[in-house]
Image 1: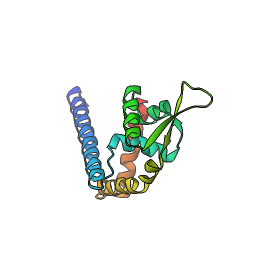
Image 2 (image 1 turned 30 degrees about the vertical axis):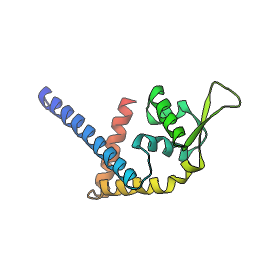
Image 3 (image 1 turned 60 degrees about the vertical axis):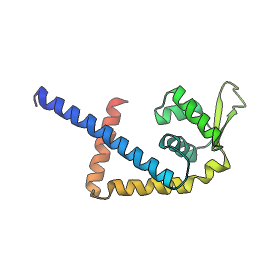
Length: 147
């Protein structure tokens, strides 16, 4: 494969990857808005982590979601303003805050998760099981190559 073909593949991958990501995020945001959940896709990523394991450090959330510290701080500030999560100083190290879900944050899980599941099903609806597996494996390899 010559350099021109490789550059076309890189351009194609970058453009498609960016467009798909933005399209999914926009679609999710609109679905959250229609359901009056009052959350953004970015907030959902943090909430989803907390639904899996509550009471984690801000740094852990940053690591899991690949967000820098200032972005995570803003996200948690907004989650606190909406009474979806709270920061609680760690009892063993007061320099560290643990992020806890509030009852309101916990109550969003079922509805938000269903919306996300619906979006995933729509996103993958015209793909066969084999195509989904190939896509998953390719994306995992790309992720591994970059981490």
